[in-house]
Length: 434
Image 1: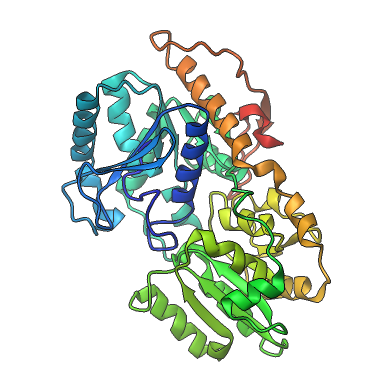
Image 2: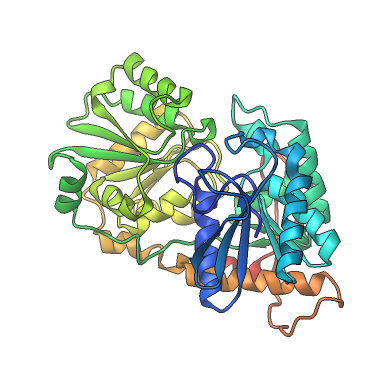
């Protein structure tokens, strides 16, 4: 696996470390438990040294490589260093005497390294974009994703053997905006660690994080990137000033010195809700179930998501979710059973949905949790393995594979994004957990 800019052992909730890092880490662990050996290559950062190896779990290693760029360089500056990254990766592979059976790249930067690896090793290349530059530019008001990125994404769509997407909405984005071949696409959702994310008794959870019993707690978990829509949530809360005992807890971000954090603080002051909002900062994932369980609901106010993993985590903890229609929320949120989908992207619509959930007695936590049982990582890993095997067959007869049991059903798909109509046959990996 290749994850150039973001380490699966990085600090979650900071600028470049979010759901993608959780996805890579949890998927790799599941694969390792099945006896597959997985090496995850990432850049040196957070004090790691070039060549340093971290045993993530049985059969899984994280290996840090020197890009040649500053260890704290933002991802937008890394493109010129990708060849150096591959050169370091190839030197490692040769020293270790390893032949990799499948390459799985994550994000467009890693995908460029994956292209080089496929050419050098004649191994199949599976890629997961996690986000798409053209879609961010379309949906996010302040987005300015470069032409370099978008052109590189087009090359990656054309050259890889399989594209693994985590939601049907992202599949439609690739069909509509990148002219992807439907035969390359496989839909497998993200998973959730049901052993970690489980309900905690609300009184105990609230004592743990310092929330009063009478408070109606709205939770946000995520980065402060513009596409995450935190400003929209804060504006929605400002529409609910007269709602009794309403409080907001915000988990994530890069700390008080970060410009994005300061903008959110200023928005709270400007809208008069500063006393209602608590910025909890970054929280270790092992503690997150306390926050999810203490909340009356989680809000996912994003403008754009490829999936929306925090919604899945909250539901696994028995906490209902209010979300915009992004990523997989259409599949995850069952109206009134485990949350609400906002009717539009406006702050007013988000506020109305929050008020609806708070006004209901709600389902018991175990009932909400039951709605996401099928997203256990063990099931997700089996579907990803099916995509890997399929990619080995698609790459040609020079790559051996003993498995031939992964034929996937096809279904007709129609793109309805931005008025586009793209009738395509859509390859669904093992039915996409449907």
